[in-house]
Image (cartoon, rainbow, N blue to C red; front, side, top):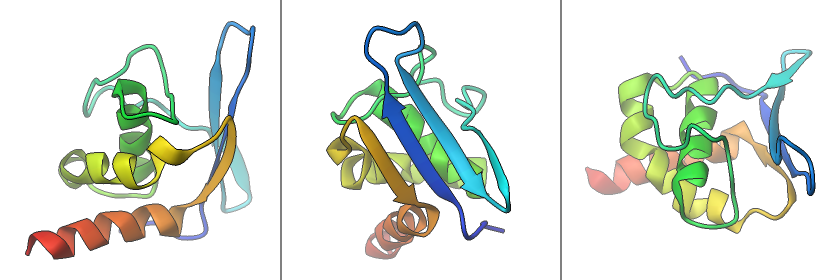
Length: 112
């Protein structure tokens, strides 16, 4: 079952050891988004965004998993999320979880 009311916020820090940070906001809680290398290992060095590479792919996958999407389904559709949303993000950004899910479900419907 997918989760609603979740927001993701990312920031790129210049000159710091950990260059990017992505936080999850929802249900009155705030926490760092886990990498989820256990499902697909695109980028053990962490998340990235603003281009079409391995760090952005890891971010798209992790967001889908945080929204409650099953691992197999997230692994199948995270590249669509990457190309539709993650490649266009700036140094600081915010995405609604509902928008991430919408991209995935639209891609699924196109495939039918």
